[in-house]
Length: 120
Image (tube, rainbow, N blue to C red; front, side, top):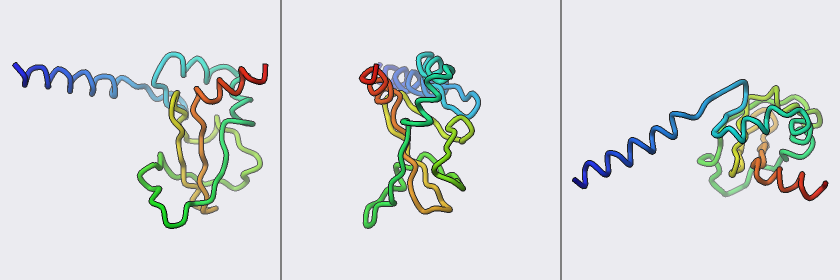
């Protein structure tokens, strides 16, 4: 009986992971995330306030937190809709900008929504 319960829990866990959908260059884990990213005003806000750059931490292991690697020619003109990056609802994402040797940090959508609400 215990094995059955464990198998059901594992199946439910994998099912929720596999049900996440990729659309365009964004990773959608919920309807709320999809709707947020489809709104042009939200995308404009993301392009101005949804990310930042940091130097690669010296002496710290960061590779286990990386969501991927990207190339950027100009960090002053970022269009997140054209990048192959994934925003998440409740977690930051870290991308190595390999040609510039820095990290691109994407803020969570929850954090961005709070920031948008505080400005209004």
